[in-house]
Image: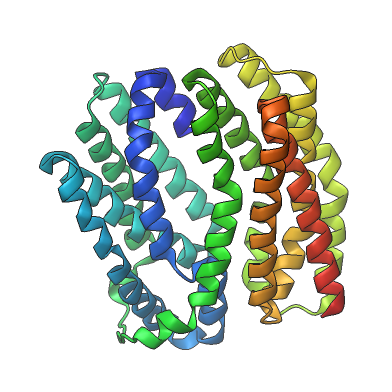
Length: 357
């Protein structure tokens, strides 16, 4: 949504300039997530009585991973570097609190806080219509600060005692979890970097809007199980299988409906046109997530993190291979086909591994 509104307010060229810096901010923030949401929820579930101490200790340990961001002072003007670093810091804290809200099952509050952050950001866009990179980063910082204040106020985190600890061993121990996330990041982002080399600016922006829309659809199964993520680590396999079957039955109607919605938005609102085959294979690439999301959670539950890591790296390599094969022939259709094929291969691999557990 931010991509759409940002382009509408400031234009493709200006927003592309913002993206060229922000992708590195988001990359550092991704690295600082380190072990990721699944591991932290799993640890919090094991230590319910002192979960805040576990949470803040984890936050404190991961904060040291933000130090490489200081190199921005050598790459950017000082005012811009300061605004970018402030955005990074507040983004880091805000995303960390999201995990805590999910663990506490404050999902309605989570939705309200996300909505408040978006509204504050878009209000900033309206109040500052002139494009300025430093101002844009400060607007993002303000939206993250609004979310942090709401979490601290509503959940009353400041009133609860905590005991902090710091250990490099924890970061080393959770390195496989980082590799899982990093391999997934490679698989989901490599196409954007490839198109930036071979496509025109117009094609890049249109492709990014298309795939960002379908990536949100791919992420929908994860949001469907969000209310019960904590419980999934405690459920029996019989109960987990029932949930998987219900989500699988929803796959086709949900993907069909939201693919139509995406088509309407891109054609009538963004004035972007793609062929039927591009929409068809983009929609087809969303179906596997409805079948493997619960299975991946089950593998986390069974401490099969290495299996997930190898699967994600395989997804990345398959995507890269088919991009190399299909991009010169079919261009955007080739990119979408590569993503689609890789997703179905990943589904096969996950199911094969889960049956062998």
